[in-house]
Image (cartoon, rainbow over the protein chains, first blue to last red):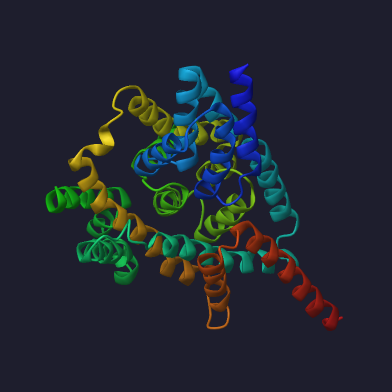
Length: 188
Length: 179
């Protein structure tokens, strides 16, 4: 039964996939081999998943599911990859809010959260560092776009007041659209 | 609440390229700066939890914020909103265009967007560091964490576990000494 196998595979991927979408790709790669999908096919799917909007893991699950089992396959794979998160993350949330109420002001709890915030800042910095590679930065124009977007993003916190103009020009969605237009004008 | 969370995440899901980490600046903008559902501290706590749990960071963060703001309905709204754009776009691509990647115009647009995505992840770090009240000594923690992941490819989940355990041990020593 192909649908059951698909469900189990993606449930496993969701359950053991630590470290987010990019880390999950290697798990998906191992799982899809049993469905007779070639490496080339998988690489193409990963490429599409990375250049389309949304979480890479969801994109990949939907695409692999569709390739293997059509519309039903894509629904099953997407649902199966989310299900473990839903169970585990909800438990973690409940525990966190309970601890937060119970141990507010407790030095063990407060210090742990404080240190975690520092670590998380490092995790985000690492995500950015890992993306600085030749496929993303092809020439000096890439660095100009990078600098401009970074500048407009930090602008509201430098000027330190929330004016409507800085709020609009620092909006991530607008900056992505503008960069896309710039890319089209420069490279096409 | 269901609709508000659904709509917010639908917007976030539609406009992020580059996966979960690229979603964070948008989530921060919508959920912290605009709607004020969470403050900056809670936002960073949320990322730590979303990283520790298995699965996709984007989905985990949708679950946390959904639960925090609107309980069960909030979770359904946020997760559905985060997943639906991906699902529909990929489905359309898989069904209709199979050769869209070879379009030079599409590739040109992405050449412009890719460095922007990296900037969007990196730039808010300063604001986060400021609101986490980072000092000269504590700045070593994120620097060490970033280098460990970047250079040695350590799984972020391990760093979160290590942070929790080391902090508890250190606080325990200090508390015992005080007594």
